[in-house]
Image 1 (tube, rainbow, N blue to C red):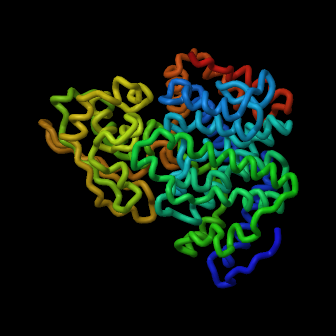
Image 2: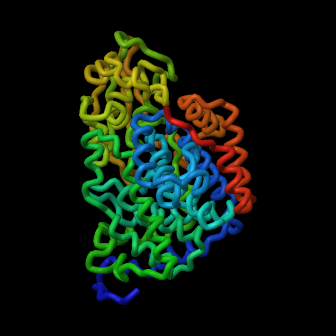
Image 3: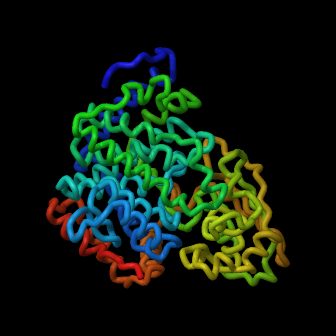
Length: 476
């Protein structure tokens, strides 16, 4: 890349060595040198993503989305790149887009709670699609997942919240570029080129509008970024360069750095970010999870009749991040998005249904007038908690009913590294994903076996076992 003039006193210039070290680290990572907790977290993330892909055919608007993506991609016949539960697509970009949309279709996919990004819908589709296209083995595919998660999360941590930006979409192109570059075996300089080529996809200050309007295409935004990132990696592999100032130039990413000390610390912390990703226990916006967990702690998961529902106060952290989920419940757009991004609705559903899972996201439940009445009349949300160094906690839930006042403070989000889902909870989530799509429970073992074996699969074995374990679902 051609050199560009930079301000040597800028945050970008100061942080540039750390960014280059980060890129060198991910381009040279090997599966064998990762510790077992990191490898286990990577496998868990991939299995979670495949389970969500299995559930995708039952998600609202997925059939129409699949038809549109097929028309754009064209026919692959029986060849091409296999997308779990969706069949063959003609190229890795199209395949990665389709899988990203599937993984994100229920908004049940993971979250890095500090970086505030969904990692699997970026890294897994890019790595899996490119591995099939270039003939990589399962181990290299897993390395791609780790690399994609690392770049996506580290950049998000370094840049921090950005006005109007959903960072999964806003930085997903660069995360996907890193994942694809690792699978392609690109050296550090070519990986840097891939990130530079993906720069035009970064930090669009309009991506959050989908949440304001409860629009279904929130599910699509990461996939569009993933397509651009995969394309950027192939362009870099062909020898093309992007702007040398992609990071520290006049219009580079680092212009968005808010706090230099925080950014420097985020880029330099030890370990791999995939081990810090949280698996979601509820199909809802992660900012609402502590409130749901608090209610279920108070009720012990027992159902409450609508006429007996207590008054519930939910005290969320201050700041703009929780504003979307703290709003009084009302119908703004797609019913499922209205529900998933509303603390009042989710708390009401947890009270009346005894839990919040995929069954609560069905048409019948998410338009249930009883849940709406409780959400509007019995649930109050206040933003008055100091998050300190955290992002999504603490959250205080206070219930007032005939049996008195009860309160619980949620300090650690369920599914987070501090409160990980157990193996039984992860399996229950996988079984729920299969059930909502009408798939047999036995497929849980098939998917688990595939993921457990990934690091030993040859390129040929990967392309044989993946379609066998995740056969195409034909839409009516």
